[in-house]
Image 1 (cartoon, rainbow, N blue to C red):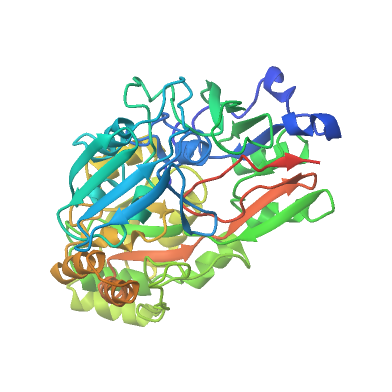
Image 2: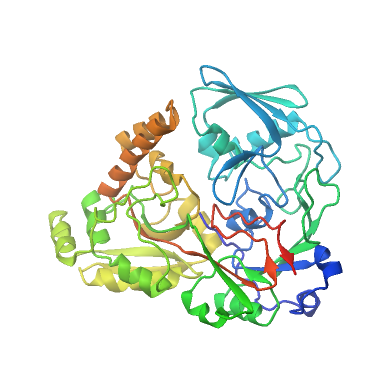
Length: 496
């Protein structure tokens, strides 16, 4: 989920910060030490990926400050990072992973298998707020026979195990207070976090791998997309990680800027609390789905950009199939389904809506559309902090809007304890069987069945798939263009 927390901070950046954001291009001799300013709407809540830091900390820290045993590249491939080798037992229940022996943390401590064990245990701990925690329930033991060897014993085979390990940041197991400080192994160290304004990363000269191609990266945080665009126009920032409105693009359609449209995995959802009436009735959910003109919604928010999807699966996932016709836009059908469900005159519900763009506009669109079938939508606008507590943790909601950024996250519909409470025994079985599949083909076949079932049940309304549009000054290159899981690798960015 995206959680751009702490976005109530001031938009204005101090003169001292802006002094480092000059729009003039650096000279050739100092370009390697350039300060790259990145505009983002997603400030971290804190600096931990297990204590609710949210999308913002992933964007700034993943691959930049912290690294995993494996890395998901910008195009979604899985490749070794801190691991050099992995041996899987014939029964698929044991993975023996060898670590690099030349890695140190920013504090100077050498990386050992004990740090890997501690990092995994932090993600799987009872108080962990990692959305990926359930993916590691299959781990029954983690052993460290020596400093460079980690042995994972699983309770059952897991075809996605190495892929899932890419989500675990390897942290110094002896470090404390990682909500405000860091101790990673990545190419940058944390210089300063001015909450509500900027987060600065400095190139680390003792990095074990290829050093960053710039001297520092500054994430400049904005609460408003227009203010962010203006900052790029005036040279206060060098690029924007993800444009939030197509209306902003025209002003950048010239030789001074580069507009890149990449591949997105971000789904905009109308998520129901499937535990509570009337949303515990699939027919009600289907009626709401058919009452919404998702094509018109997408066009109103993103014009010619973005994609319609009929399930939780983006086209980049191996088990994608086009299911947009399962719940077609049909007002008469929606009214008929409501009547069959016992609501011929509609009903009333509260939609908890995050306060940041584009959710308020989406909420108003849904309010207007559902009124046509007799459903009254009361919009309750809440901050991202409130959303996390009220909706995600306490499940105190009827319906909500949220964007989910990760790939391969259809499996969350196999977890009845997830915040939306979808509970289908067949789906749970297929998800479990898919994870234990012997081949990728078998996994794909089972997860396609999951896609089809959650679409048939209208477990949620998948409104659209975001476009991924990065806009940068023309003299800046080397940035990632795909919107994979909120990560934004900064180490190859250069000014020329």
